[in-house]
Each structure stands twice: as structure tokens, then as C-alpha cells.
Image (cartoon, rainbow, N blue to C red; front, side, top):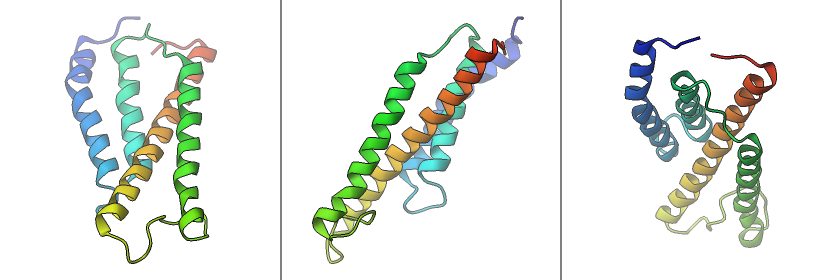
Amino acid sequence: MKNSSILVCISRILFPFILLFGFYIIINGHVSPGGGFQGGAILATAILITYFIDPERILNLKFLINLEKSSFIIILLIVSLSFLTRGVFFTNFVPIDGEIDIKKIFLIALNFFIGMKVALGLVSVFSTFIKEGGYRI
């Protein structure tokens, strides 16, 4: 089954803009609506567009799953840092009277790794459905 040339052309044009928008949502998630989950879903959409451009392209599922697991471990390590500084899990590790810029960096880093986990998870699930089901787009 051959893809429509219009679909391929539009997908190639939109791909970098969707990636840029996804990263924008992730990076600015601490000051605007959005964040890691929403930006990760947008990034997954950008990555999955490549299936429409080239249906023969199959991503390495084992590599994607290992990356997703690594991002989950990094998220747990970041949120566990607060236990060392405050004695409580899952809070900002910067003291309350600490600098606001360091608190922003914490939120941006957390949003980034959450976005990567969501994007990799959605791409892994979709790739598994395609690979195991034998479907072609």
C-alpha cells in the first residue's frame, strides 16, 4: 500500500514544528498549562508521524523500552533527592528559602524526564501494536 504523496509531504513539513512545539510545552510547563505529560504526548505524535512517511521503518523496541526504564529511574532519583535535603520524598529538594532559579531548574528537569518517559512509552506501545499485529499504515 502506497502512502499519499500529500500526506508524506505535509508530514515532512510538520515534523520539525511538532517536535519544537512538544519541547516548548515541556520546557514551559512550570509557567503555563502543559508540562511533561502533554509535551510527551506531542513528541510521541511527532515520532509516530515517521510511520506515515516510511511504513517500513521499525524502531528498535528493546532500545525504546530500556530508554523508558532509564528515564523512570532518573525521575525517581530526582524526586528522591528531597529526602536528603528535607526528609520528605517527592518534593522540591531546594529549601523553601532557596533561590527561585534553582527551583525552576528542578521543575524543568522533572518535566523533561516525564516528557521523555511519556513519549517513549506511547511510541513503544504503538510500535508494539504495529509489530505484533502485522498492520501496515
